[in-house]
Length: 84
Image (cartoon, rainbow, N blue to C red; front, side, top):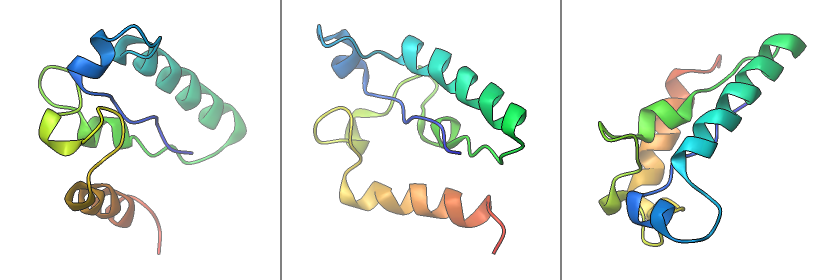
């Protein structure tokens, strides 16, 4: 099971109902569910978030999705945190 990605600060500030505080709450629930079901939990959120708790602006063209070069960071996390 994988965590939900963070969003940029400017995206979280828009009136769209999505913010990083909610994402952190949902990720905690996902971790609890993974533990309950005996699933491995991939904390990709922590690999993508910056020191301010948001997805860096330069990593996303729209505030929510990664841009092409940063998919490599996600791929690297998956490759180094799963069993091959």
